[in-house]
Length: 255
Length: 233
Image (tube, rainbow over all chains, first blue to last red; front, top):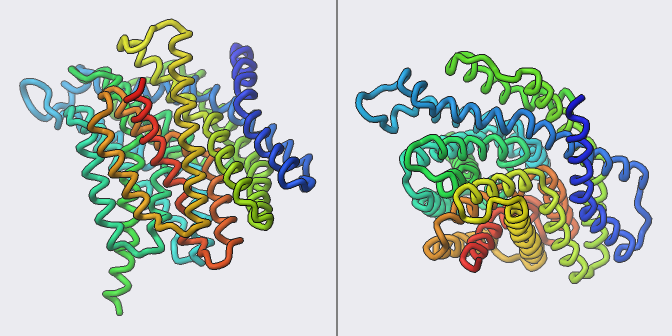
């Protein structure tokens, strides 16, 4: 029961974070819209669940996911481990970190598939497009983009190439794709960049980046540790537009 | 509950595989790991349940109410407040801002006392929250006035590229990341409901073409604002 005081402290601080949202919603509801809230009791219970959920989430995060992610990153980049699986001789080369890239890819796919906000957007997109966009097709396209992005991001931390080269190159690809992709997919594709990196992905991926930057020689955690999340945001835009272009191309070919 | 377990299962499989077969090491503190994962699953379950029960329906009904009322000022005020309010409370943003403060303190960028770290992470949180508020306003204006989304996003990208050249190097990674951190579980359903609700209430708008895109602005503007914050501070 040692987590009880920590739970109460987190609950108290989360209460102060949820109060503004409740204030905005009820303030506008009563002062501007001036209509009674339907199912007020149910809404209030729902808000209490949100508060409780955030508290438990933060508690579990600090207890398991953050230390676990950091521990894995440290162990996978530990010189003893790297020397036991290395491919080259002499000083460590970027290829010797291959398990890190594989881990980044696997964690990218599995966390993106677990993101509740991506599931919500995929269901909405399926509904709005009258079934033209499959829930699983979109989720897989986004997860693949996220996985490729995060593994490229770890490669960047290992090699130390400045982050903006990758981001600018990614932006140029997105801009070119925007002109050729089917018009209806463009807003959804831009949105899917943001939804990949949610409650589950951010803590794990941020910990991986910071842990990696701390253990790879000559890297600064402040400069190199951040940036993985932006890779996970950028590449799904490319993969979702690519997915739409591929399906359009297949339809054209079969005609 | 089962949904949350299924959603988290791939992550647990990946981590378990790497720990046991690649690293070939036992899990340390297995009891606290298991209870932590249990708390995360329970927390997510309550969170999503509460969102669908409380926040989601009220957000959706308010989008329709504003569209019927026809007051642009109050709609924009609500959009700003929604973007700002949901972001300030975002657990993922709180977590990353705290990590950023720890790293900044270790690097000697700010003082390593708790007061300096708290003010750094709070400053970062408020900058990001402000930018998300502005982003939702811009996105809602786009739906109302039918501005072309791809041109707006491209202008944003060009701004990011130009500002990257002038911003201090330490802030670049944090700025790029803050774009993704903002748009989390609490923001996405509310903001998506707002956009699709508006696009389906206004004549001549297509929910597919016009309803999406709010989150895109909410992930782009924080990058610009945090880069600007880094250039000023």
